[in-house]
Length: 213
Ligand code: DX5
Ligand code: ZN
Image (cartoon, rainbow, N blue to C red; front, side, top):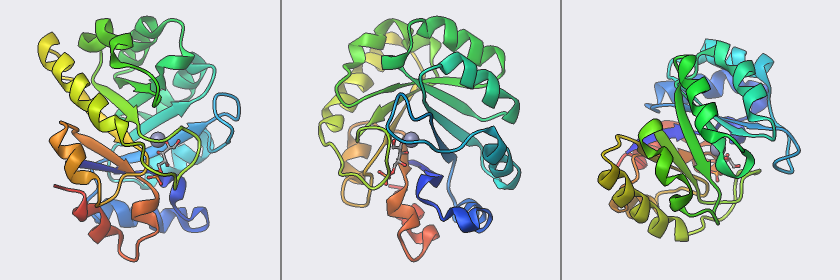
């Protein structure tokens, strides 16, 4: 299992130290939650802070957009050269076009599905994507309870990916901890995002390693 700690739960007063600690602690990606106060009822960080994050991080960035105007934000974050940019299918009229745009920047495109969204909605995009992010909480906040129906959804999606011949990875975001990591692994999940589980722990390295099942 690959692990992407979400810095939403980091201590922003010592963000530098927290990012160093997760990178030294063996994380695979640094998950960055970008919220605009419109698509979700919360507001987080923009390119000024994320460019500082990109300078400190020794692991690639995984940018999760929770915004209304996806195309605008893709242009804003692309110069920071993240590994992935993911956008919500629920907020995009032209997902195929946006995927091509992200790829044209040399960035891996990913689509996010909210808890209610069925993977069939993106069946015809599977061969264009590098990753699909399944939300296991309602987007907007860290520290929420894991919505377990994501396990069934991951299994359905895994089958669809195999059938399509795509090499798409499955990522799960929200409420991930050492209690549900085995079920996620068994369902075929490749990457987990973990915010509060990592940053509320006494030892980030230990917490990250406990998810590497
Ligand atoms: C929620 C964010 C998540 C969040 C996860 O909208 O996308 O990345 O930070 O936090 P935890 O792991 O605490 O649920
Ligand atoms: Zn996220």
